[in-house]
Amino acid sequence: MVALEIVLGFGVLLVAGVALFYIVSIINGLITLKNSIEKAWSNIDVLLKQRNDEIPNVVETVKGYAKHEKEVFENVTKMRAQMMSAGTVGEKAKASEALSGTLKTLFAVAENYPSLRANENFLQLQGRISELEGQIANRRELYNDSVYLYNTRIQVVPDMVFANAMGMREKEYFKVEEAEKKVPKVQF
Amino acid sequence: MAGKGDPIVWGIVGFVGGLALLYNGIRRYQFRQKICNTPTSKIAAAAMGAVEVYGKVKPVEPLKSPANGADCTYYCTEVFRWQKSGKHSKWVRIKFEIKGITFVLEDETGSVIVDSDKAQLEMPADYTFETGGQDESALPERVRNLFDAWGVKYQYAKVLGIITPREKLKVVEKYLAVGDLVYVFGTMQPAKGQPAGNPSVKDAYIGAKGGEFFYISDSPEKEIIGKMFTDVPLWVGGGILASCVGLGIILWRIGVK
Image (cartoon, rainbow over all chains, first blue to last red; front, side, top):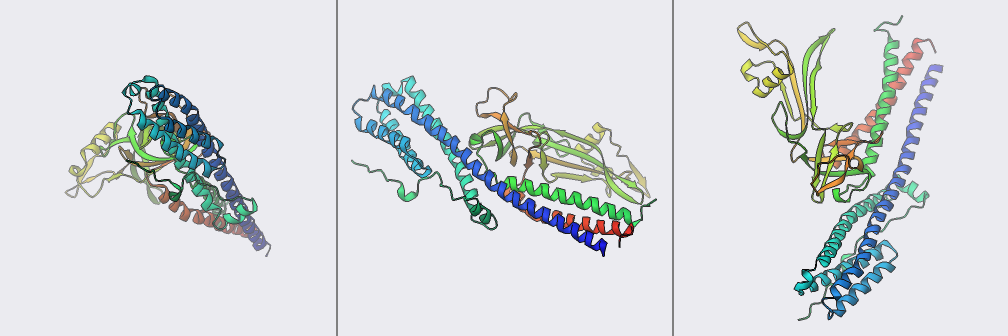
């Protein structure tokens, strides 16, 4: 009987150890996911700031050649200010999308000025902005994947129990809802 | 003295083996969790630290796998001999060669060097050849050349009018063919001696770092997770059961009632 008790006790100890390890790994997994979202977001935020810093230089360069495109410059400046004042991830996504749109317009306008197109400084700035936009797009995908993993995990059993206990809430995606995207009006 | 047939030996084997199974199951579960908790990055967006990337392999220097002659970036070729060991026979590895430790992984956003040294590589055999049951002419030329180059004896003899191999040999080859899609989980680290003059190659490499998990597979992530999902309960459950049974036998043999 003693032998049976020892074996059973040992078995229970192992099962309890495995269960404890399982709980710890769930908690650690959730914390890792939360941190990876923060890391992915800070990588995007740096790029957004870098892009914002380059915009005044682009505007000034274009202004030197295309003084009459006042409305375009005003739009870019307005969107840049909106981007800087945006607080949440969703607001930043919306402002970033709008800013990208105005920058596209600015570069399209620049196409009408051959001397501007030949300006090396402008080409460099345009290249830099395009590169930053590309990097933002790549990192946005990684960020959104991290958010997807995290949001899924905190909604499924058993992770949900621990996520609730730790006060973990759903995170926002860095994207603009289709309905919120403005269709540009074209006037002929 | 406890002999080989003594139940206590089996008890110890069951107890220790069970604990080893349990440990492996837990390690495997940890690997699975790491894979599940890490989003797949585009190569251009992958930051320093633990990363998970998926892309096509390209060679740093083109290689040809010795047994199958496939264009590849990495190969592991092994030759086994069928050997008697006591009452049983088993395959014993007699020669092997691994080449192409470093390769380039590429996706639509860029490429990165992967230094697969110390990686856990999981891929099925791409080529196997076994001697036996056929005459010498059936031996593929590449395999024959490989045996010659590695000094592996493969003489055939005429037995009862039939030419058969004297020894049973097996060649197993695994490789990453150029263009294969590969899943890599590793640590992105600052560059160390990348091929210069290629701006599309990231200024960093993926490799082993300390005891961090480093895994390469030619299966997609979903398949890897799915396989581990079925493996882990078997390893853990089997480990607990085997160690308990082992302990029971030991206690019974030493007279604990």
